[in-house]
Length: 475
Image (cartoon, rainbow, N blue to C red):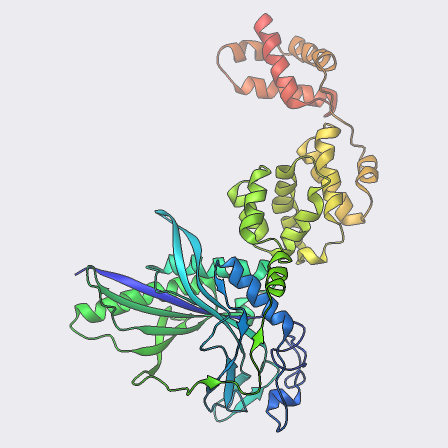
């Protein structure tokens, strides 16, 4: 029996606004526990929520990037439950009127582009962080009330790879709309995967299993593929798949049971009485969209039009800081592809060697562009440009001064100058002429090397090779 997988993802995105969703408490990561709180976050009597304007703007931008219908009436609802992670006993969310509906995102598959539908995007507040110990639990309310957007896909993915690429596409959108830093390792982006299988041809869905809080894109792929295999083995062995909540255990590379689901939880949703409906004007919604930073896909297309390869563009765009650095040098460089090469290879090597991030680099990208331009304008070799770059990085001098300090001279590329060296080397190495004519290509490399030695690196090797072949043909 052959099965097909039905996969849907729920992605929670922590927004990086200055304050929380409904209070003026600071929204900041990695602070001392319970220092970023206000009375509302602790559910003190008499406190009232106020909607974070920037959080709404961010949600509109993400919804638009996901091609969604945007609701111009902003309403909130109460999701009632009693857990220790929200002291007021309910969460403010958008159950009945999410800010965005009916969108999609496109991902690359082995069969080409695939459009994956998105049911909804809604805003809500995060819960506090719980630290569990053997016989007690500590609560950190710094995270309570942090603005969240939840993005709920349709069950239209069929493999771990598709789920991973979908999640990465969502991450790119929330990062480049400046909504979130998208750091899964810090919990800024959390993913729940809903997975079921059914025999190919069957219309009814199989029993759904939820895998909670997966913390990396790689683990999304691994967890989904593992769960597909686990469910397939159960059915083939005559057992049934049970409705469960599981977690991904990275150390054992398998999903582990957290709890079984018997009945659906009744959260007793009702309209949040302390937040009146807010009508968003067309001007407000349009301004949020029009002022949105350039999206990942748009940047990628622009980079490709500048001559970068797909790999170049994706490496640079994998880090928003790296992309910003690259952008700052584009207006002053003559060859964007060369700038990308220096950034991806030389700059990244320097950063890795010294344990630094691109944000730590004192040298600005226009300076790197100046070095790259020297290769074309001053006819310098790649190695000479790298030497200049390393001197600039080490001493913080200007590229021009670094070139002088290193005694780097421009290469000769005019035929008359090069011909003098070609003639001298050919006269001194008659055997190499014979070898080259006999089909020994290494002889040409030897002759070019001799020219570079005679000229002390002042000759353009490509031009020297061309003239060598022409002169050898005459002898």
